[in-house]
Each structure stands twice: as C-alpha cells, then as structure tokens.
Amino acid sequence: MTSTFVTVGVVGLGTMGAGIAECFARAGISVIGVEAGPEALARGRGHLEDSTGRALAKGRLTEAARAEILGRVTLTTSLEDLADADLVIEAVPEVMDFKRAIFTDLDRICKPSAVLATNTSSLSITAIAATTTRPGRVIGMHFFNPAPVMKLIEVIHTMVTDEGLAEEVAELARRLGKTPVTVGDRAGFVVNRLLLPYLNHAAVLLESGLAGRDDIDTAMRLGAGLPMGPFALLDLIGLDTSYEVLSVLFQESRDRRHAPAPILRERISAGLLGRKAGGGFYGPGEHADTSHTSHTSGAPGPSADEPSPKRVAVLGEGGDAFAARLADEGLTITPVEEAEAVLALSSVPVIELAPRLPHPERLVGVHLVGEGVAEVASTVLTDPRVARAVQSLVRAAGRVPVPCRDRAEFVVDALLYPYLNDAVRMYDSGYATCEDIDVAMRLGCGYRQGPFETIDALGLETVRDGLRALYAEYREPFLAPAPLLEQLVAAGVRSFRDRP
Image 1 (cartoon, rainbow, N blue to C red):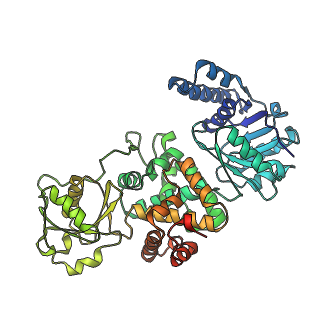
Image 2 (image 1 turned 180 degrees about the vertical axis):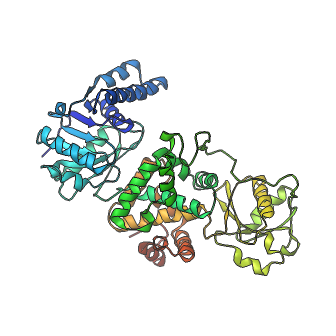
C-alpha cells in the first residue's frame, strides 16, 4: 500500500512534539496538533511561537514564512479530529501504558490507510503495534531534540511492518530535510543504544572515584572532542529520562553495562533531574562549560607555600618531545635519580614503575590526549603535592590537566573504547551498517566523527589493545574486545574502510 502524506497529526505538544509539528509545517505539510486540555494546548502553541520566533530573530525565517508555518498548524484537544490524517505521530512521555492507550484510540479513530508512528526513543515498537488492528501500519519515527534543528530521524520497522512502508517514511524524512537511518526494533535503536551506556559508564566511574565531575566532562570535551561532557549531557537529557532508557535497555539485554548507575537513582530520588528541574549533576548556580576553547579545569594548582619542582624526569613513548616542551618553560630535565617529580607518559597504570624508583612518591602518570589535554594520574604512593605541581607543569606546557587515579586507560580511553566496542558489536550483529551507525552518531549527537571513523583514526590495534587493558583491570565482560575487532586485527586489517 503506497502512502501519500498530505495531512499529519501530532499527539503531544511538549517541546519535542511541537518541534515535530514545526518540522512538517516547514515542509509545507498540514499539521493537526493534539493536546489533552486547553492549558497544555496553550503551552504547545507557545512552544511553536517561541521556536519560530527565535528563528525569525536570527534571520532564519521571514515574518511571512513564519506566518505560513504557523498557519499550517491546527490545534485541538480532540483525537477525533485526526480521523482523516494520513500519518499520526505520538510524542507523549516514555511510558508504555500511555502510548498503548493512545494507539488503541488512534486505531479506532484513524482511517485504515493511515500510518501510526511513535517517537519513542527506546520502547518496543512491536509491543505498541500489538495494541492495534493494523500492526503492519505502525512504525517508529524517532526525532532528536530540538527537532527543527537536528538532522537525524531513526526509522524503525518491526517484523510485521508492511513491505515498503519504512522506505516511504524514510523518503518523507528526506522531504523534511532530514537524514533517515532505517533499522529494526531493538531497545534504544542506534543512538541511544550507544549513547546511554557511555553516559552510564561515566556515572559509574565518577562514583568509583576515578576522577571528578568537572574533570571527566573536561576530558571528554577537550580530549575526545565531544560537544558536551557526559554529566552536562545527562543534565540536558534529564536524569530520569536517561534512567528510563537504561532500564529498558537492561530489561532487554540483562547486560550490567545497561544497569542504571546507583548515583542516577540517588539523584532522581532527591529531585535532581537535570536542567529542567534546576539541577542534576550541576546545581542551579553552577555552569557546565561546553566551549571547546576553555583552558580551565577543576584541578587545583599548588598553594603558594608548595614549591613547584624545577627538575623533572620524563619517561615513556613521546617523552622526549614533551620533555623539550617543559624545558622551553624553564624546567631542567634530569635523570630519575635527581628529579623531584617523575612524569611517566602512559595510558596504562604506572604503579609498576614505583618499586624501581628511589622516590616512588614523586611518580605521576601523564597521558597526553589529543592536542590539548593531559591526564595526570596519581598512584597510591604519589604525594598529593607532587600531583598538584605536575598539574601546574602541564598547564604551563599548554595543556589542560585532568587529575585522576592510576587506572587502566585513565579517563578518556576508559570511556571512549567501550563505546567504540559497542559500535563494533552492533555492526557485527547485523543491526546496522558501519556507515549508518556513523551517520546516526554524527547527526544524532553532534559528534565530529562516528565510531568507525574514530576507530580508523586511532587504529584497530590501538583500540583492541586498550580494551584488553581495560578488561584485565576491571574484568567486566563488556570490556572484552568484540570478536570481530580481534579477528580484523589478527587478519592485518588496518581500517574498517578496508574490511572485506
């Protein structure tokens, strides 16, 4: 059955639903927006007016174009007004009972040819479709917030979706100026199935004391090149929303990686839900810096009465170049025996070096990440004054210090490599292509590179070895390198672009 999408209904006009309605109206499609009552309807109208008003103020819309967009949207409190809609998208809160009840009503009201879509970010499309008499006409159409800006739409089909419907909906997404990625019905789909475990892992590492909140966020922004640190992003998404998505993932997979970190539950119970509630990981008076040019860190420098070391030894691969940079700042590079501080350049625990040093309390691990970050790792023997002094040294060398504990892969790689591993497993399962996964993460999360582009840039063997080191340290099954990654390295494949 070929669909012609002339009139589209949107049920639920919160920030996301109103944004979806705006997307269709911008594409010249008539929209019927439905809310539960007059007050909610007024809020929905306000979302539409505010969003188009911002576009007008920025010169992205003219007054005439804004009037045309708003004029294409009809607002109502009655689902019955959707009887002649060609497509209806549900955008209500992520509660299965709510969604199933709405789809039961829509199935009764809408014409038989109408397509019923859900904007769920994680729930089973199959379970939602089962409440209707037309499961073949039910599909997932997952927009990203803010919908008028974000370019990705995940199109999710089930095992009983009518043949050709997913491609028709994907073509509709293209009419909206979006890029569709079409996949099957698995919890979290592509983006949330990769993003939420990474955010959860960051919460687990924070809880374990690996590094502080600000330092983890700084490391992932400036070291990994992500638009936001994980805790700033959790606050933006909402801790409660993240918890619910993780719970759905865990219910399907029973993988500990998907079990919500206790710190999430604790903060949710305290009402710390994120920006929408005035505070989450960051309080109302705090600011999560999201710029890429900040050179500040939560790391304290040495106090005035703590002398900064003038003689340092630098060990490890890349040590000569870094030593030269420190020498340019007036430091004396000496043998280990004469140093007050020993900097061991490494991404693996450096405590094994301590027994061979005359002053093990002066040993600090330093991992240079990208062009602007230096992770500064303290061992169980490191003098805190030496660690603080080394943070000042790397800052003087033009890098942002990220203090952390001496653990395998420290902060950036400990978060980055498991995310890349998850992407390899997703591809190997046949769920999505490397190209679609890369597109989904670039457009859905604003990343500069998708996971496979990142793996190719780092090198398959580097990622494999990093995962091996993490697995040896933490013994968590999800940290073991994906079998496909092991096989590609063993076969001498250097890039996913070169895979057979």
